[in-house]
Length: 231
Image 1 (cartoon, rainbow, N blue to C red):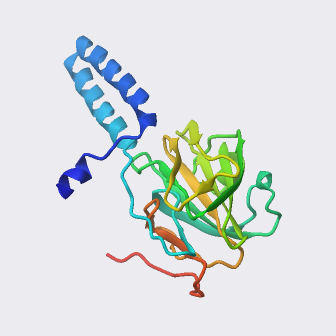
Image 2: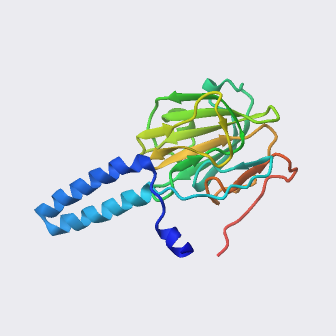
Image 3: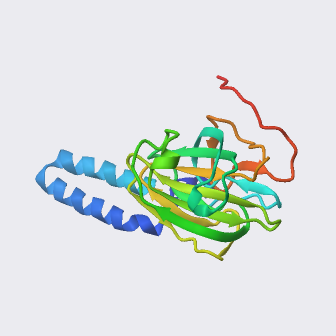
């Protein structure tokens, strides 16, 4: 049964309209030529795969900040949060997670708290793996206040292929770590800005799992981790 669950993963409701379109196109293509129909079947299967929405086991200890997205950690730098969030001009650690078209694209809340602000800003659609995507690309920025008064920010960033950001968070909404809050289609990036002085516990190149991978521990004094690729 557990093996079956890894294959029969639920599909997010936002994906069903797209899957229906792919099915219609596939039927029409098959009526024209069988090879086109088979190509449509492959694309429809990929569409189902893209919108998969697996459950996640989120660590529940206070102080833990979990990854808001699946993907690989592409950058860890000090940066100023988006100005529209009103978090000042002091730099803080920013962890960037790049999602390719094969990653799960459901976004999850990184930590328990209250949504202070949620701002959409239109922009460009340059490659989301580039540093300038944080400044130039279309984005949805969220500020979250923790129980101890500190705050973090997390940002959904559209990419070269992505053309639609979905975010269901509203100001004053109480949220829990691991809650689903939206998605980006297709291919994108998610940034998370940690409280000043926080040491990220992930490493550039590491694969993060949304809602599960621990990005930081606000109760720990461990320095930023180092790592290397090993075969």
